Length: 234
Ligand code: DC
Image 1: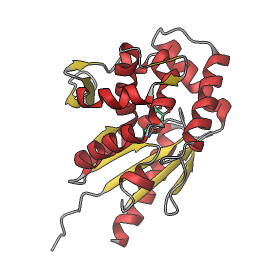
Image 2: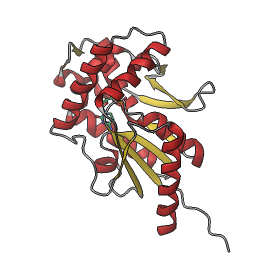
Image 3: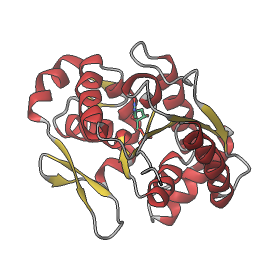
Image 4: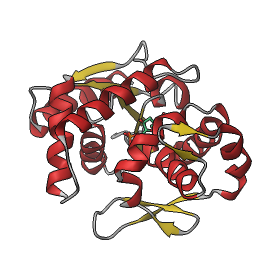
């Protein structure tokens, strides 16, 4: 008798710009799972705060943002162009806007606010509750789904990450300056790893993937091995 494969939760955490979302999307596509981008939620709150003048110059107005939280609704809807979900802020599609430089420069301070994290963790848990999801972020394996079956912690050398991010911006026709990208990456790593609430850290039971010298296909070969082993263990 063949046993129906159980749909598990896969978490992908790690530093900024090490290719988490590309890798997580490829896994989701291969397994027929849903991909959830938790960083997009922090970015959407940051975009809202910027528009309201509650964040800027790397500083977030904690009281103001907490006060405005009930006015923020974040949803995801399938996007036929990409085949994945697009992020909506209060009904407006903001998938492009949340990737802007200003959002990237202000998202880390906004994500240190405990009340913001509590709201978004609740949303992340509700979206992933049924299993069959790949979620990427910083605290998914440690805080959001500590009991997930498969946890991956991604890393890559800082200069490799900056180069990838720089090339991504260039390919999208966005303004790009290598030194500025490098600075943003190091600053986000510093804040994400040192914040008091849910800092970025590797879960004890996570498997590390350093993809500095790996192609996307090599990463998938690595993943298939790992997944096969895990599924056979259950
Ligand atoms: O994955 P990303 O670069 O789009 O995430 C943007 C920021 O959001 C990141 O600098 C830190 C924050 N973040 C977080 O604090 N916790 C998560 N689970 C995901 C992202």
